[in-house]
Figure 1 (cartoon, rainbow, N blue to C red):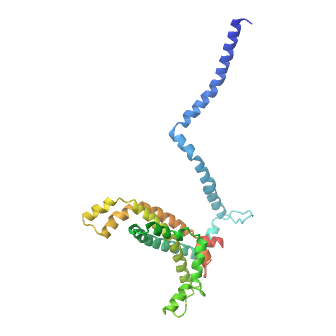
Figure 2: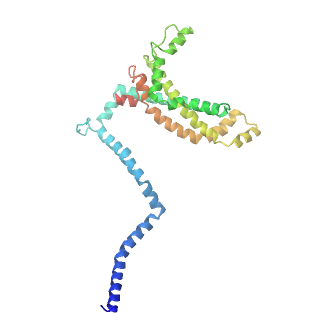
Figure 3: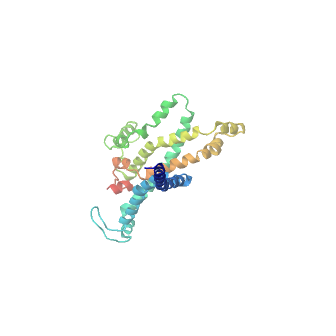
Length: 284
């Protein structure tokens, strides 16, 4: 074959290759340029999180709303009944008692955990000797499994073997030990006490972390200006701890409102439904 013909053929093949490759290269370049945008890349990275939220949170929530307006049971199809289920709940004595219990339980427990947690955090912040050991010991109620620690409290509140009753009787303060878990108001107090005991370390350690982050120069300047301990706490410590307190109050309110283990182990909602919370009522 003549040399000119070969050169012409090679040029034709090269042109075809470049022509066929250029569209693919152009598409890849466009994709690369598209993802170079900061906004597009951000949405791409958080897309899996939105998918998980949709599957694990949004979809179950929508289905719960759907089932709440039907008369369906587990494994059985149901028909639309409107707001009849809600109407029945609002006229159900046990549900109304549970609603009241849940708010009383949550408000009382969170209030005392906040006050006592603040006091304990201030005490730990001032402690110098054995600081690490003391802080580690404070965390024990929080890290011990809830069911195991609550069983210990159940034994202490037991009407026959209560260590509280034994102590009070031998001190001569009472003649007959009260039935801690069999009397409605005492059972409420017992459940709230155990919840405070368990949640106190969470408040104390979290607030302590906030105290450590406060610049000491602020306290020194306040002392120079003649501010006392109460004024320093009110105008320096408390305002600086507001972000920490907001977070810890939010989490504690959620955890306390949905508590199950403590109530179930101690009273299972009794006596006479006086300690039922939404979690234990739903389980029943």
